[in-house]
Length: 254
Image (cartoon, rainbow, N blue to C red):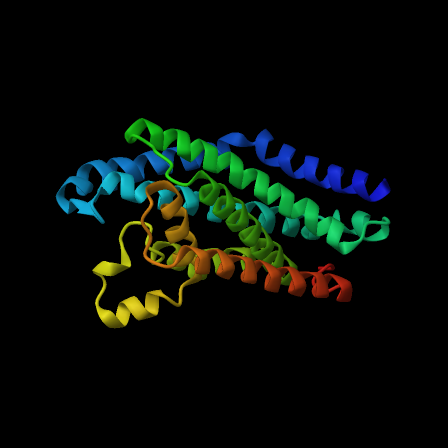
């Protein structure tokens, strides 16, 4: 019962934090998404034409939605957990009878909640610009949840190793953002020459976006089952690594 209360408390704190400052956490995604659809969809999309026989605007919708889920799930956890370390609020949890996996679950749950909230906002915006249809809803939900969990775990790891606020911006700016933009959000890898296509297949985010696009449009650049397995494998690796670090106490003190 005590552990359940601890989990609920952390989760409530995380959700309340991003809801309380919604102009900073939810509104920017709505504005950015509108610009993506206006510039890439309306202005440039008409010149690009169809991809896989699908209007360009419809083609980019799944990628834009998942891109917002990735960045917000990651950003929510890394900023919140590092702030707790910096302000030494984390010490209250360390001296309380709260196991590491429970603390991790609360923060990941908060990242998942923000990912769902922002994803819902972006999906609503996309419905204004295009006739949103879902070919395989079970795939959409599965990839949505798995991706949000994966990047919430990644954000927690980043926060564990971070020693300054600069450290929590390095990975998003120099690793995460390039991988997202090169993950097929705005194009199909079938357009790439052979060498670059092979290189793109090393990018794990490509598999997430492609599987998510399959859920909406029924087309994908990669095998969907393989894509889902890759996401699950990454989750397991990050989960085991994070739990091991928590047991050692790595990064829990600044």
